[in-house]
Image 1 (spheres, one colour):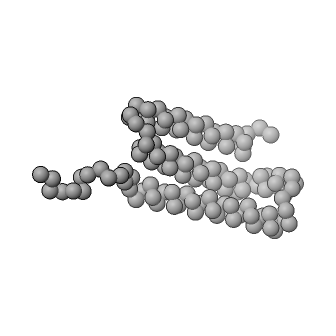
Image 2 (cartoon, rainbow, N blue to C red; image 1 turned 180 degrees about the vertical axis):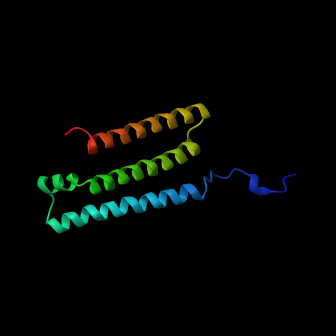
Length: 119
């Protein structure tokens, strides 16, 4: 006889850390989006010279990098949660997660190359 029904697996609950991390990364991405929107409104549009001037500033490059890292982490939490719920068997789940991890690391490297690499 089961005396504690909380042990039933109704759905995957990954915890407050995942919930909070997705909210924090969403706020970071929203703030960056507002920053870019503010620049567009301030300059009356966005042309090549404004865009080049923005990325000449290391603070904007850092803000862009933080946006991209937030995006990658936000995506990772979502993909991992979906894989944990829907990808069966465990071997396939691990394979999907490893592919996603490798892709996100590669995208982070590509972001660094674009922002601070050779011009």
